[in-house]
Image 1 (cartoon, rainbow, N blue to C red):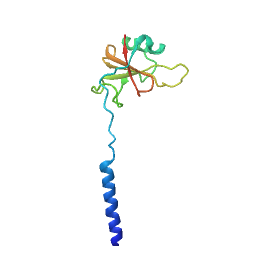
Image 2 (cartoon, rainbow, N blue to C red; image 1 turned 90 degrees about the vertical axis):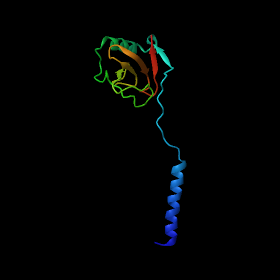
Image 3 (cartoon, rainbow, N blue to C red; image 1 turned 180 degrees about the vertical axis):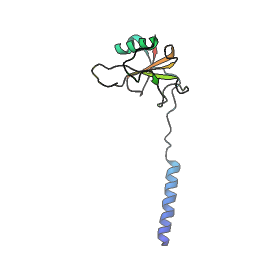
Image 4 (cartoon, rainbow, N blue to C red; image 1 turned 60 degrees about the vertical axis):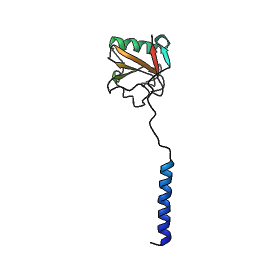
Length: 130
């Protein structure tokens, strides 16, 4: 290998090392421990009020996904052990699929400690208050 080629490889390696050293690190967003945005039960869309009542009654629910574990992968809700949160579909009139609206509750299934509403498929949450 010619001397020029060796220098080129060394310089390329040094350049890449420098770029990696100063490049910003893509970190996960920290979880939000204090959900400040709230929504009253009466402010939920009508189907949301109905689902909220069904959660406290133990069902029955229309979607087979209702009551399944919500993993909190977005890390927007306070962190708890897997299985603490469960999700429920809030139907959107006119859609044949589940849509983007959900209620996520933490704690016991029929006596949750806390519930949150998301209208944008887990991009943001509002704590449900009485």
